[in-house]
Length: 362
Picture 1 (spheres, one colour):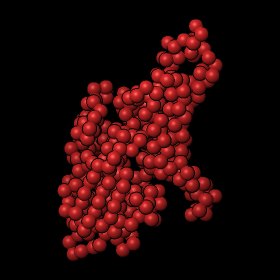
Picture 2 (picture 1 turned 180 degrees about the horizontal axis):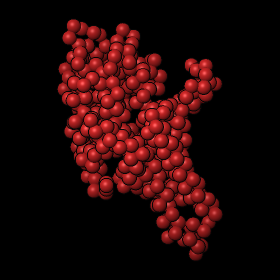
Picture 3 (picture 1 turned 90 degrees about the vertical axis):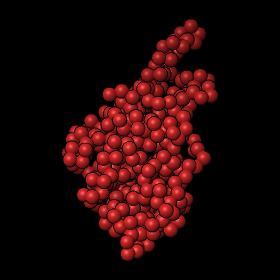
Picture 4 (picture 1 turned 45 degrees about the vertical axis):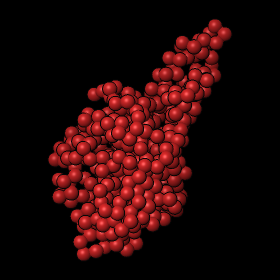
C-alpha cells in the first residue's frame, strides 16, 4: 500500500479529499471482523498500515483526523451499537463516505469529563440536546459526531448529524499544531435527536469515553512513529551532506549523539505501540499500557522534533518548512487524548498509588 499520491494539503475541501483517499486504501478496515466489513485481521496489521501512512504523508493533522474517525465512532459503534445502527452506519464509515469523530471537550472541561455540561432531555420520541463542544477534530468536515451529554446527570452518547435542526458544526480559527486536522466547535441549541441515535445504554458514556481514549492513546502514535522515522532519515541525510570546517556534520559527536537518541526514542515508541497491539490481539486490557505509550511517545516526539530543528539549524526554521511545524504538532500531541499529566495520574492510579484505585487493577 502507498500513500505517496495524496491530494495536496490545502483548505477544508482538500482535507476531505485526503481523508477519503486514505479510506479508499481501506485504512479503516483493519482489526475489524469481516461480519462488520473489516479485513478480519489484527491490531498488528493496523499499526503497520498507520506507520506507513505517517512515513509517506508526514501529515500529523491527517493522522489525528483518521484516528478521531476510527476511535471516535467506528469502534464505539462496533462495541455498543445495536444491529440496526451497525447496518445503517458502518458501511459508510468504513468506506469514508461518512466522516465522523467524537465531541467530548467543552470550553470549561477538557480532560475532566465530570465537568461536562452539555445536557440531554428525554422526550417521547427522542432527546433534546443543549451545549457547546470545543476543539473537536473533524468538526468542520464531519457528517456526524458522537456527542457526549448528561441525561439526568448520567453521561450518555448521542449520534448527532450535521443537518440535524439545532446542530451547528463550525470551523474555528486555526490552532498551532496539527492544523490540517480541521478543528472546530459544535453548538447544540434545542437539537432534537431521535431515540434510535442513542448509542449504547443511558449512562454508558463514561465507559465509552474511557474505551475510546484508551484505543486512541495506544494507537495514534503508530502513524506519528512513521513521521519520526521520516525525521530521523532527514537528519541522517543532512548530517552526511552538510560540512562544517571541512568535516561532515555527523562526525560532530554532539550531533551524532542527538541522532542516536532520536533512533532510541523511535524504536522505544514502536515497541510501546507494538505492546498495545499485542495486548489487544490477545484480548487483554490496555489501560496501563496505553497511558504509558501516550506519555512516552508524546514526550519523545517533542524532543525528536526539537532535535531535528537543532541539527538542521536555520534550514529547519525556513518559512513553510515542514520541519519546524512538527514542534507545534508535538506540543499538541502532549495534550490530545489527555495531557501528559493526565497520563501520569492514570498510571499512578492503576498502580494503586493515585486517587480512585485501591488495588493493582490493570
